[in-house]
Length: 215
Length: 237
Image: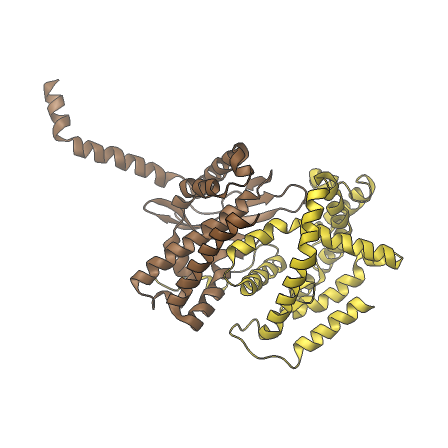
């Protein structure tokens, strides 16, 4: 008994590490389509239940997205893809700011989209990918109430050591990354990378004031 | 008819003279388009959007759905023809089934029973048919009041207008009421999307343009467009 206790005391760090790794491995093992489904259903359950969100509490939606959705996004890759050629000509500080401002903008956009959620039904399409693939597209379809035509929402995902991460979202075939790419490029061309960062920051602040004033 | 003439005039105007190149190769008419976009945006903010908001707050959801379904059902007939044009006979048959089913049991399309019965709705128009036949989209084009389009889709709209069942109904007053109601109904369905747009876009014009071009391309390929070169990661990881 005593020997056992001693052994545990001696190796507690090792044991701790092993438990931690087991947990991590589990997160990695979750298939991308299962991950998308779990998160979507989690978020929708909260949206349906939460009266504050239904009444238009955008802070609560943002908090929900922060906790449930954002950990599964790779914003660095997303920003890099959107910047294209201009990414390499930006300094590490600029890159950091770009990622953070872009992330804020996307959270705002996503919150706005989710606050108008009513009773849409989400269908999950079967994943067409081989087990060894490290880049997959997870397809879902949202059926808006009233209109009968579903809107596709596809998640472009990559395998990372921390599990599957989303790096682009396509709504009805419209890619977030591609849509922002032109805007970013022309902004950089006209006003430089710092100009783009300023525009993003201004847009994010404008969202703040608009939220308190308008409906 | 004035509608067709107006579109022709704009196309002519857009396609000749004022082409000073901006940055985007898909949008050589950017100065004209930007002007038209801001005109449309002003009209929308002053008239269409407030009316749509009023419509949504006053008219109960069941009735709004009925109105939306009514116009959606009329579209299905032309969608069917376009699917046949594109050689998608199964989809065409499904559209025809929808149209017959909803026009009769669905009381002139007010109820959409066909979707529940497993007949899927499709999105087709003559612009997509031309795209399928290999006609390129041509330059991006913002039409007055009608909004984002391309040279190809703008011309195809002339055909779509001729085939529009609302257009076929006799009597000018009836026409105008139906056109008006359809515009309001469509705009109401877009209210949530336009608030997302306000939140998302740094530059609303280019955001709408770039989203629109992708959307049309996606529709032409029925949801499975071939990957474009620029989709690829520039940096090696």
